[in-house]
Amino acid sequence: MVGVATSLLGVGCASCGSVVLTSLIGFGSATTVLGVLPFRGQEFGFVGIAILLITIGFTFKKINQPFVCKVKKK
Image 1 (cartoon, rainbow, N blue to C red):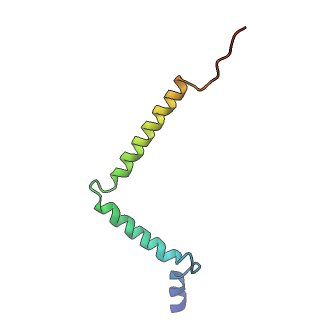
Image 2 (cartoon, one colour; image 1 turned 90 degrees about the vertical axis):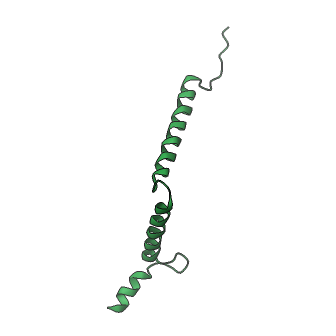
Image 3 (tube, rainbow, N blue to C red; image 1 turned 30 degrees about the vertical axis):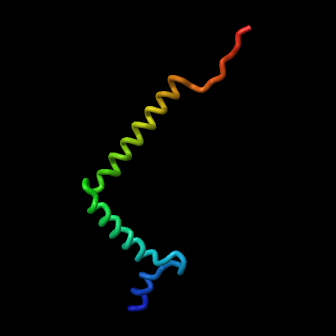
């Protein structure tokens, strides 16, 4: 039974590392990084909203001034 429990912590190949341990380490480090930030992770939401607004602005610009060739009338 001890072998089964310890093998669960070592699932995966040697180059990839342990699936269970890397997910736990990733969760712990992400929590630590978010805890250190001044707004506790809300910065990522602000950056996402800013990127969304910039993208919408570029889209409106492309709609109003599309890149098309002018057709010469004969």
